[in-house]
Image 1 (spheres, rainbow, N blue to C red):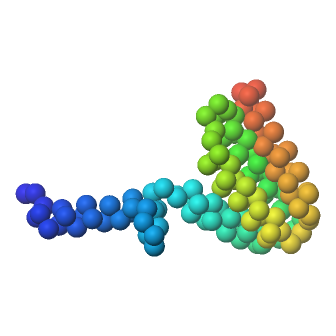
Image 2 (image 1 turned 120 degrees about the horizontal axis):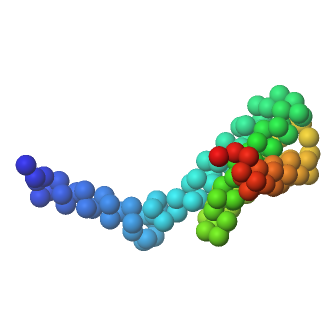
Image 3 (image 1 turned 120 degrees about the vertical axis):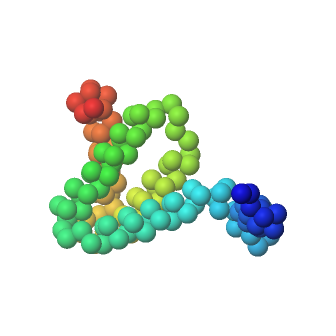
Length: 127
């Protein structure tokens, strides 16, 4: 019950196209970080745009910072630049979409949330 040779050839051809690096062909496998960063940038923009007030905006960015702080704590010595690229893209998107507050306040609460999230997990207050 194997596949026909023509079908196998087409499947191999499609996989090969995804991995090609010729002019005019986008390598989805090699550039996945760029697509994730773009998606996260748009998510941050939309999330900030629909926050209703200054307090809600700062609470959302603080919680996002806590999530990033948790991840940084667990992957302290294994972080690579491809992790920071989507995080910075999210922060840029959030700052661009913020209607209430300043970019300095957003960055301050994001960094404060990251520090608090890392500290909470360092002390073992959350499993």
